Image 1 (cartoon, rainbow, N blue to C red):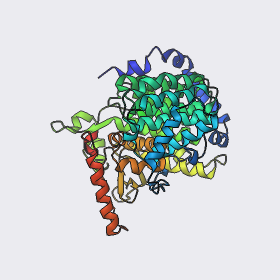
Image 2 (cartoon, helix red, strand yellow):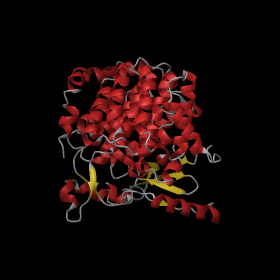
Image 3 (cartoon, rainbow, N blue to C red):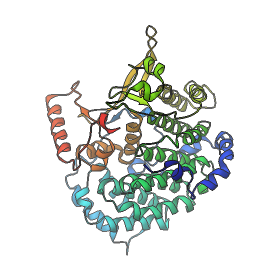
Image 4 (spheres, rainbow, N blue to C red):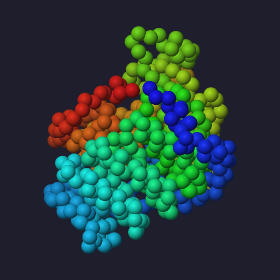
Length: 481
């Protein structure tokens, strides 16, 4: 296993700036970020509407995804392959194109690849398409064209399953993040970088390098990329750091520093920054526990037999989890901060943000108190036994079933995929998109309630199709971690 602390926190690329701004970052998180208007940040985070294939930064936070049953407007488009082919040719032929024409072609490409798994239709055109999309981003003739170009690169990386995309796209994305004068493009490029790193063949070294880059953005409140106190930019960096972190197993060395950085962001005045930081903290605490091996004694490994006895039945279903290390040196301090956010009642906070903070931080606090527990709704304490209980978070996918999200790494990946695919998630899942299946190796169960026999038959057919298109072996959710 590589020395993650050295690579992430002692990289020559990031440490000097972060070390210089470390104390400033703590102050800036509490004061500078508070100067940003929550409403203003939300508007700035928006690219074009969903019909324009945006969705880079959503106002929907954490536990808001209860269903992936969004209406698919492409279900009645039998000629989508032909339309996509025509649009690809239009995108590649830029000689006599106009800005408006390129925007329309990019918008159509994003719509078609979002709602259809087009791996076969993209075959043989990946390099040319990437070059064309990159030109739209690089020139920045219009913000909308550049934003749609970044969106198209994301969808290309997610659909094409091509390991050359990261190496070809990363220099452009890094340059856009550092040098673009548009905060909207900076945030969109950060989201795109995360997708290309995971789905475009970055490998372990690339993932660690980008985690260092993103953590530097967070620690400096965006100052490291000349986006000082820009909430959407910082939120994007936090979200993508968490997404990349799900791909790295051993966090013992870097957990302390990372938790502290995200704790600083809990004092931001922006709800999205706070919630995204809290989710990363929950993920880091979850990673401090791993499954018990067959030949080990849990009490010896965890060194926390009292806690193990107290919570032996207090975890989500699956293999027994054992504590390996302390995620952070002062968990009581963190719990106090999370408790305040879970019950915050400031009049300066909108009702919507207050509701999100309450529900999300109640779940985050539940995991920090006992990392055996994943994301849950309605977590409470049985007054008779003094044990925590709650229902595991489930997400409806189409009309075919539900997905159990019992671990934070699953939630982080699901929200990242949902941001890119939006209403097309179910289509990509059931059609066997390798990137989606590799990211979420979770078991599906049939949801019989309210289903007709025809629905169940369709679900079985979809499941059979999904399984037949798995090119690689996938473990169950219990075996994945």
